[in-house]
Length: 242
Image (tube, rainbow, N blue to C red; front, top):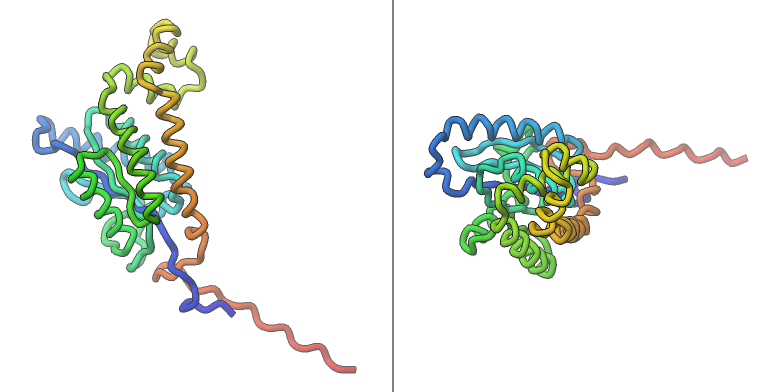
């Protein structure tokens, strides 16, 4: 019989984002409204991997809880691309919850959130775009390197390059995207090449693959209060002896 006490805790990936330079934003109220709309859209888009929906926790910070660690990079990238006017810093944290899982990612605590806080604090101290903690040391070091390179490349994009990269992810072909942007396909090709689109997406896939190594733990039944323990089936009665 499997008892609740014998089950390892269910692991999640917490993501915390901070809006860099938020105090210098001219239209803070408008930014807040666009942020809410973008987060609502992301909640629907990534519903299959969101364990607790996006929540704005302070005026310049928000967070989400994911059930699949491999989704961390796609969610971060999609959020950045949905809010191109903002400069976001991110911390990802892998671990268990110590409290009940809520509908929105607020009012919860546990190792996953502690690790995410550690990650975003480290990213702030080192002026990085993204960091992940709560993993093994080798994975954290590898991801630090990947995210440092990705952050440096992204920081060098022009608005047109960023729009081309975001559009290329969403539109089926470069020709279709060129028509949508009303530019020559060769111009779009050069724009994507100068933005290192292929290299960026390859690095993002490598980071997601590293995070996916920890997904096996996520399949473990939860020991948090929102999940009931497994109920063992009654044992079969012994066959009667002839």
